[in-house]
Image (cartoon, rainbow, N blue to C red; front, side, top):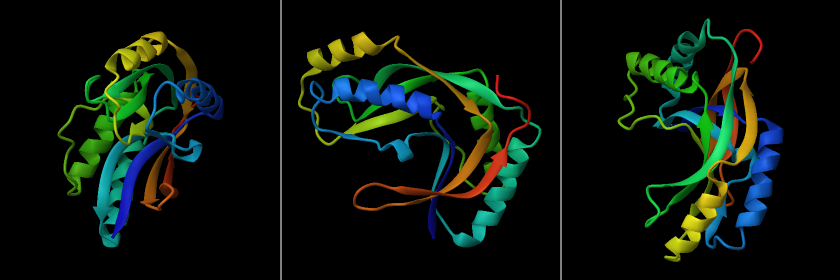
Length: 189
């Protein structure tokens, strides 16, 4: 069994800008486990634990989902939390781009055709910036911080490829290794 997901890497300049925001948020927002730079990515579909013999079928489905698709860019703007401000578990950066949802839908559809369960939740493009170990209950402070960052522009990130990743969990964070890379055509723009 391997743990796997389908994702997109983030532009290093966008990552740098996000880290600047994190540095300013670390003091007021306590008890967050911040995602490392190498782990900052957009997940199109999380597959979880899959048998190794299904990796090839998943890769072939992803080939079909990405074939003929042009490269594109998406914007990274604002901060928010899941599931809500009273019980935050995840701090996220919002993503904007008209091709993100159709790409995620194609990936989901093609993987379903080879036996992987369809997503039950609506796809909400975001980057997970951090996870709360335990929320301190200071919703007013959190609301104030989020308000200050709600429209902040972190830049744009090109999408030139989709990656089928293996994820190995380690005590100090996951290690992501590409199983297959699917280039997109054209120039991001």
